Image 1 (cartoon, rainbow, N blue to C red):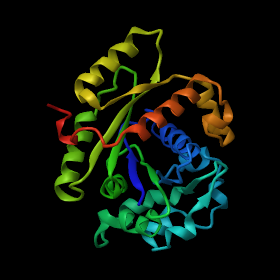
Image 2: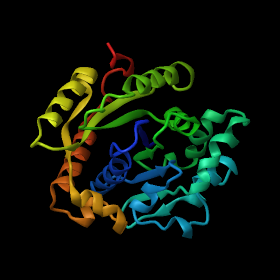
Image 3: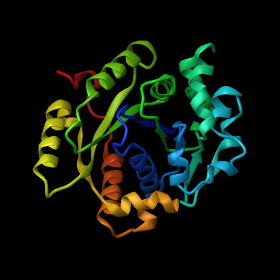
Length: 264
């Protein structure tokens, strides 16, 4: 049965979708059958992996709202062993439509049951908010991976995110653990990047991955070509970083310590 990892941070622009696409790609390239689930209405993970959103017959919206089976929605990608459940803009309306439904926080978890045995890893890319869709992802997940950018406002909102995790564990998913924290947009030339890394390590302690993702022009260009960085520029620093991050994640036998420890 697949390990389900949700990639979330309610702050936008932290490299969340970039991490979802490239980490899922690198895990698949290591020989693990992998599913990328795009639950962000912007559908950036879908287009970033090379899938034309407008050509999809079904999307995650149909799975959550209309009960379409995940196998009908699931698409192969250009990366061997990597599949995607695509998202389109109509998913933005799902927040309102789910409110009146029974077991609304468990729609995604229930929908993934039909395909979970087909994969080793499932990565869920969330919208930059802590709304009902993100709650669905947290309820469906085994672990949470948090991307944090190496910038001044890096810790802004993290207490809120961790409080949400605490509430999810109390009310929806008692087994939810923190997989880890990955630092993104790192610039070794600046003192600020190093200071932010140190502050995040103080906040999360041993939960921060050793691998940091560098700020990279090539990493920003890759989505416009519908390619993960390992296919767009396999030799660049960002490509090597995501390959290393995937190996670090795969080597973890257990998720990092309890998610309630962050703010102590």
